[in-house]
Amino acid sequence: MPRLNDRAATNARPSDADLILWDDQLAGFGLRVKPSGVRSWIADYRDDTGRKVRATLGRFPAMGAATARREALKTLGERPPSKRRDGATMTLAQFWVLFDRHKLARLKPRTRKDRACMWTLHLRPALGSRPLASITTADVNELLTKVWSREGLRFNLRRLLVSIYRQAALMGFVPPGFSPASSIKVPPIRSRLRFLAVDEWMRFGQALEEVQRTARGVEASCNAIRFICLSGFRKVEALTLSAGMVDTAANRVTLPDSKTGPQERNIPPEASAFLAGIWPADGGYFFPGRRIGHPLVDVDKTLAMVLGRAGIAGRFTLHTIRHSWAETALANDVNPRVLQSLLGHKSLRSTLVYSHVRDRVVRQGAATVGGAVARALGMADPAAAQEEGSATLDDSG
Image 1 (cartoon, rainbow, N blue to C red):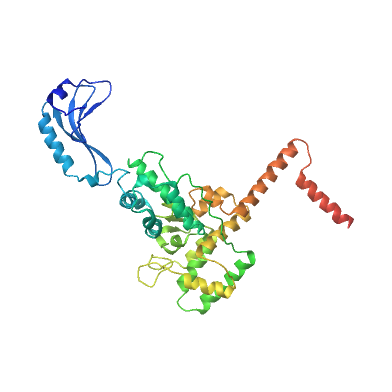
Image 2: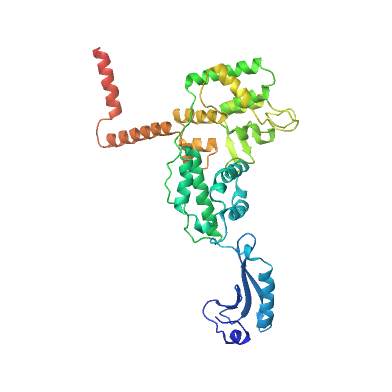
């Protein structure tokens, strides 16, 4: 379309949908013609966040083309060309500011901090100065190869890049589906879950009792560890627990915030009774810290003391207790869906991450279904036959 003027605006004919005529001399300046025949001058640009904005300058013929052009120059001229970037000019470092503001800001503080560390230590040095659209799969693969031995980092770096380009596509900086990281296959993180065996549970409990009785200044931390053993709560959920969240009569805890948002969580009667026994007189935190009015923040030293006295070696954190709690539940035939609710998992997949327990549950399910079908077909129940055979062998012996 040539230079927009009053004659071009008068001759523009409406159609079944909005018709936009763009000026060929001032980028972003145009005339929108509605199906009703209403004509309006418009200016298109990107704001400071990268979003597309369409400003209506005025209606024609009340506002002539010359006046509309001056208004468009003001509207577009107030925004330097650097603000109207696209994927060919905006670097990954420049887009990271927008990504942090619009995407990472909605994450939990710990998760946001982890993403920021990956950006600072790995993404920015390798790719930060490159335009979004110029980064290739080979570039990403080279970066991941450097950290290939660190499987957790390589997995999360790829996931972060996929998220960055998905957000860039939503904001119009790259075409939909453009992502140099999506086609790279990264093996999933191998399970490194550590579980307490039955004898380790016993030694751990004895050592916890001994540390609480003999060490100084560990009352609150030992109580916190004991509650996590009884409830399977996450560390932060347990340490920030206050009297107002607990209903001991209903064995229920109301968490205003958790990893997956606000929750109501059922707890075992033993955990409820334990909390009732250490109920805070001031109605505050069950596990108070050294600062008055603040919760406990660190139990690592106390945990290390307990593990040392129990003779339990290897990588072990408070979350190991949570894993062991879940493993014990599944080993005692607690339904995975019930356990999902008890643990506060958003997805059942998170509950079934305990692979060896999941396999046992699947085998039990297969045996139950197979036995039911075999009986319905008039066939011998394999499990019953196996038990009968064992009894026969015992009798013959």
